[in-house]
Each structure stands twice: as structure tokens, then as C-alpha cells.
Image (tube, rainbow, N blue to C red; front, side, top):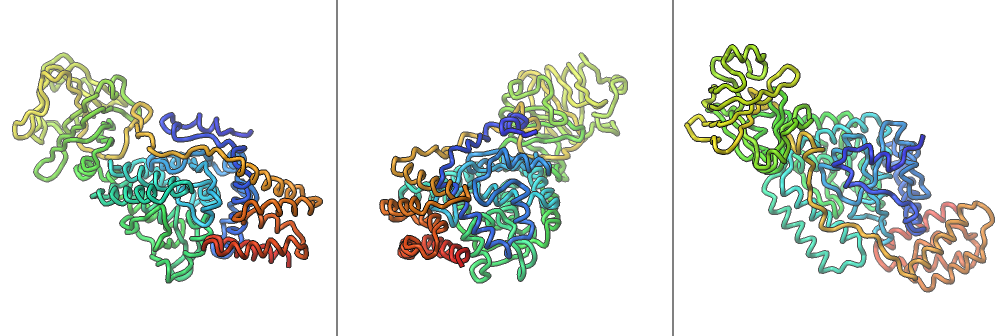
Length: 583
């Protein structure tokens, strides 16, 4: 049974759905399809020897044709056979969203088709890059596992406010660079904004470091060794320019892939001066896990908490009992040997267990934050979480009683115990009224007049990671992008050109009688479009090599080479291609 785009989006977590859209296949013009056909045919020819051998096989097995822009429904029918699916997104999306989609084995595919003006290299994600670049390698199980795993780890990565500012600046610049109507001044201003934003970022968060590893592997990776390698990165596989330039060892430095790649910045809007070479897809996973071992979600403790404090964005603190505290970490207390003894959040906060929000403990009930001690109590050999209700009663800890809890750290909680929240035979949360909390030096951490006090229970912090525990109840709440891709209104002149493209396309796909008179008429009409090289090439493909219009078109294309370096490069490819077919 065919699964529709709507069904896939409906099956996703609700907080991810706003970042997706639908592919309206009819919105692609005949020129768009011609650009796709030219690029994919050239890429398939050029990459036959330089790409990882699985590339061409992967195109076919993931529903990607060389002749037309892929239909998402057709792609998903193929992807379903290997346990993946795809959704359409609008250009650059936040890293946290991108990673979570990958973790769910969903490929985010950019909606747009690059313009004829950016065929060699596009600064903005497009369907060539996303579909023809990423999808083919998913048929390799080791690569698919890596892709999903980097998504799972990315979901846990701590991100900073600077990360979102960088995302906004990159997104805006990539959109402007792809839009031929934008002026030089506007582009220069966007470039300066990105440079200033990067310069203002004084530390690399886990999310930013992981994005670099993702870039140098999934996007711009090589496999083999520095002297003998194949291409597998989607950014290279989808670029006629870079897929060739990257092979020049004088122009592009090759570096063996290690975790140190996280320290190498990149610019999404220009070609890369160096690339990293992995030994294999299994090696990718080894490097990834090496990086993950140093992340806060695995380290926990005071080190993980300090990372969250530095990022100043919503993070989740998980106690050894399993209770999860989500919010912006605003305060950490440690003992003399550096162990965490008290954690506080500010702003909207949430308490959860097994990533499900605890009833009555969401951001509405906790708009100003939550704070709790961490550690063991004096004269209690086990963590407070594992005592039974009867054992607690024997120790004088029961509801509606005035109790005093003295932690080994020196933190003291005094108040009336109102409620004990338990899950899976564990105590997760004590709620107090008329409560006072003091620190090791006698400082007041919570006053009785501040209301009820919810004390999370656990003897240590086992994990700290980015985002909320229950994202459905505490969504990302990222601001809408300041720049977005707009549906373009085509002029009458453009529509007439697209109609000619469609006529040639229909004639070619019919695989029957070629109407030379119609082709010649179209060619004559192209005098109104002196810079239109691609349609001339498509007409050339269908003409006999000894036809008068054939020689006229070749001469026109040769003259157009002087228009720009890109024109010269593309026209040389076109003429070489048609010469091979005609010979």
C-alpha cells in the first residue's frame, strides 16, 4: 500500500510537523526538470569512477530517476523497503529538528530545485542535494546505521543561543545567494551578518561540534585513504563543480578522519578547502561514538551541568532515580571534590519520567523554574528513591508530617511533606509546604513564602542533554525563520520559455517520431532568449548531427561560453555529452 506524504507527517511527533511541508509536484517547471536531467546525467557519468560504488545502485533502489525530479510518494514507496521514509522541508532547518528526523529514520528533503543560474554549485539545500545526495547510500546498512545514530546523538546535544543565531544567518545568506534577483549590497550585508555572528560565538556547543562532524562526513565525506578515495558525501555527490574540484589534491587538502574534525569550521555557502577521509562506514560510527563519550548526556555530573549552564538554553537533567528536570540550568552547587549537590533551572520548566511529563508538572505549573538537591541523606545508606513507604515511615518520613532532611552535602530541607510521587517502586518527587532549603554554608536556597517546594530525588545526575524530556509538552519553540523561500511568480516571458522546454520534453519522452520542423521553429524562437543554453542543448540532442540547425546551435553554444566561467564549464559538458551520443 502506498504511503502518502500526509500520512508520514501525521505519524511524526507533533513538535516536528511545523517544519515540514508538502511537495506539489506540478509546481516544478519543465526547465526545473531539464536542470535535474542535465545534472543527474552528468553526475552519474562523472561519478561512475569517483563515487563509492553503491551510489548508482542506490539511486535506482531509492526511486530516483536521472530524467525527472523525484516524486516524494514514489521515493517513499522505495524507502519503505529499507525501513526509511522522507518528508519535504523548506531549505535549511534547525539542527535539532534535522537530527531528530534522522533519528526517526526520516530523510528531510529540501523542497526547492536549484535554479539554472546555480547548476554547478548551490548555496542553498535543494532536492538534488537532498534526494540524489543523501538517499542512495541508505541502502548500505552501516551508513544507514551511522545516519540514524548521529541523529540520535544530535537529539541529545546541548545547543547554545549562538547556534540559533548562526542558523538564522546561514539560512538567510543561502536563500539570498540562490535568488538571482538580490542585489550585491544585500548579499554583502548578509555575509557580514554571518561573519559577525560566527565571530561573536565564543564557544562551540555540542550541537555545533556535532554539526561539523556531520558536515565533514555525511555532507562532504570521502572514503578510503588520503591517497586513494571515493566520494560519499551528499554535498559532493550533488555538485558538478565540487565533485570534480575535490579530486584536485593541490586545491583541496585531504585529512584522515578523526574526532578532531569537530574543531574544523565550515562555510555552507562556498566550496570547501579541505576534506576528511574515513576508512569505512564502520569507522564513521567509531569516530561518532568517540565524540559521544565526551558529551554531557553520557558524562552527566557537574561537568555535564556546567556545559548546560554555559549554553543557557533548555536542557534536561536526569537524576539516578530516573526523574527528569527540563529547563534552562541557572544554578549549580558542588561539594569540595566537585560533585553536584544542587541544581536549579529558571524560566518554564518541566518534570518528567521516561520522557513523559509528570501530571501537574509542566511549564504552566512551573513557569519560573525548579530547584532540587542531589545526593544521599545522612544516616541513610541507600538513595532516598529506593526506600519503600513503610521504610520511610520508620524513619519518620511520611505525608502531613513536619520533616527535616539533611544531605551529606550540607543541604537541608525542612517542611511539611504533602505528597510522595512514586513510579516503578521508586520515590521520584517529594512535595513540601511551608518549606525552607538551606545550602552548605547556611545560605537560603528556597523560602517558605515562595509556595510549595517540589524536590526531585536522586543521589547523582546521570545525564544532561539538550531540549526537553517530553517535547510534546515542552516543544522547541524556535522562532520562525527571518527569511523563507517564496513561491515565485513567473513572467509571461518565462512561461513561454517553460512551454518550449515542455514541448521538447514531450517529444523526447514519446520516443517516437521527432518533428524536426517543430525543433527548428523552437530554435529560431530562441533568438529572443540569447543566453538560454540549456534548451538549445536539449534541442541539439534530438537533431541529426548533419542538420543545419545542429551546426547553428553548436556555434551559438560555443559563443555563449564567453558569458561566464560557469557557462563555459556547463556548455563544454553538454557538447562533450552530445558528441559522445552522436559518434
